[in-house]
Length: 555
Image (cartoon, rainbow, N blue to C red):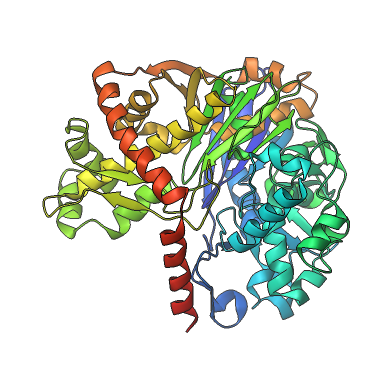
């Protein structure tokens, strides 16, 4: 077993990462990252794709599925070369994806944007997870489900998100009927990439349960969908329903075409697809009750397993076996975290800071972090709301927006930067407290993802949450998690738990809370909660500003 290998591929927001892992002990032998050539389309379809530049309305976020194939053709061969192994010793490949990222396709999996007559139609492109333009549709789904007493609504904390496939599908139906009618499959990208690898479309149980509103074996009914919009009743039966694959199962064998892309042997196991956050929990050996894993990158997804089924307000879902078999898997999250820090650095920092950072041999994030780290808690006099990309949990409203209170003429960039770091920690504390109040205890907190390398941010989280903070032992947590699932799909381990025990790793209690700082943060958090409830429970001002923006852009 020590001489067999698997490949995990993590498809993120801006790039794909391939990782070669030894099956026997989880050793990471080679990795490669491939940026998406088209990144995220938020302002326009470029002329290179559409034949002309097509502007996009606010809150749109699209991608190009060919970019995902590009990752398979480049990152996987590079990772194999870096590992220095014989590709013939690789026994399986598995992938994970951001969710909910939706690809409209023909029945054979061809993305609609690849049809020449639809290349200039925005609705023919892949909707990235952070496409938030379907909030009006999500509002209607929630109102109707509550009015009708739909049993599935409580499994999502009473609200579904504009990020999910039902709201996005309804937006497509209402805004571009031609593209909707030509959509033969409405596919999670997590399943589409597996389809590309093995030629078989298998719907993964994780995405279906958390993002597809599949509960107790049923999607929302034809009657419910028809009540949402006349003619929409067939959405599930016509475009969504598909045989399910359990996590860790084999979806099929690697096709000859995909073997040519990747340099891997034809016929090796291709695992059922999965979600980036959910595969990370086994990689961090955090699948027991009370262990919440935060995968922190452009956004943060919070996942945990529990032995109890509870209704947690504003959660993103609870699914039987949604993370590992035999436990209820819970999900919550924040739509903007690293994205907020990146926005601030790119748009709000003067050139003098960039020059000082360069002189110190630092990037701007490192420079601002160093300056902010010297401050006592509360010294900046600020408190911020972390809703620059809306609120995923617990308010589930992507019409909400960012806010900073307390700025004066003496406020410096490092002050605001630290306030934004703290705001994301406060948002996580709201989630943790909501879970606890609902009867799902959170006793351990584990961080994975790129933001784990920021020591100030990690200490802030430990102090704000008043919890020891552990770190995933791999900097490529999702890719390692996918590799673990590949090993199971290849038959190397009986289940994900057994594979994780050998291949996963974690650094326990890497950061401990400081009582003095924690007490100061309690006071700041009280102010955050006041703002959270004032602007989040009564979102009139923020929603009206969004409406004014859309009207102005449309003129």
